[in-house]
Image (cartoon, rainbow, N blue to C red; front, side, top):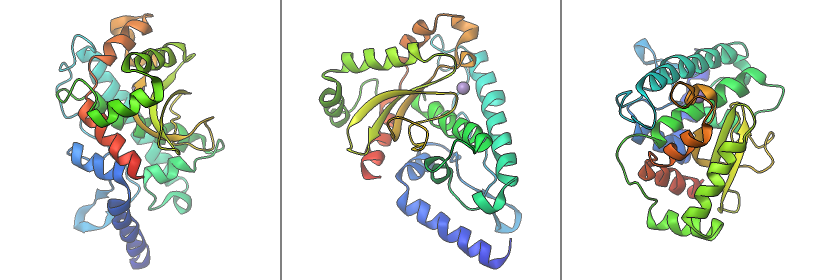
Length: 254
Ligand code: MN
C-alpha cells in the first residue's frame, strides 16, 4: 500500500470510528469487530481483509433452543465461507471496494454486484446474529425500546406475532428483521437470501436492522427439520435485548 492510499484508508477508518455507531457498537460488543480491518504485520492496514468474528460463547450455550452442532457448522463453515468469498470478491475489484467499510458497501449495493451482495450481506448479517442471541443480557426490551415497539405495533405481543409471521412466511432462504426506518420508527420486514434492510437499492422499505432471525434451513434443520415456526418461537426466547437495545440507540443516532 502506498503512502497516499494508506492515509486515505486511515482517514476513512478514523471517520468510521467516529461516525458509524453500529461499527462502534460492534467493537464494544465483541473481541473482534466484524468489519474491522486486519492490522497486518508491521502495522500496515489491509483494509479489505474481512475477518470471521469469534462466536464469543460456547456452541452449546443456547441449547436447547439452538443445538451445538448447528451453531458450530453455522459459524465455522457457513459464516466462514461468506468471509472467504467476500474477500475474494473485494480482491477482484479493489478499485471499487478498497478502504470502504462493509456497511457503506451494503448501503449502496446494486443488484449487479452479486458476489459482494451475497457474501457481504452474509458476513454482516451473521456477525450481528451471533450478538443478538449472545447468552446473558436482558430478556425483555428496555423501557425506551418497549415504548417504540408499542408505538409501532401496539404491543410487544403484536410485534412478536408480526416478526414470527415474517420469519415463517419468508419463502425459501432469508431473514426476518426488526429495523429503524428513515422516520426513526420501527418496522418488521423480511428479505431473501443474504439481503438486509440497509440495502436501499434492493428492498421495498429500507432501514437499519436492530434484530434479525436467520431462517435459512442451515440455521435450524438439524434440530427442527421442517418446523421453522418452532425454531422461530424458540429464537424469541434467546434474544439478548441489551444488545438489540444498543443497536436501536445507535440506529437512532445514524
Ligand atoms: Mn445462516
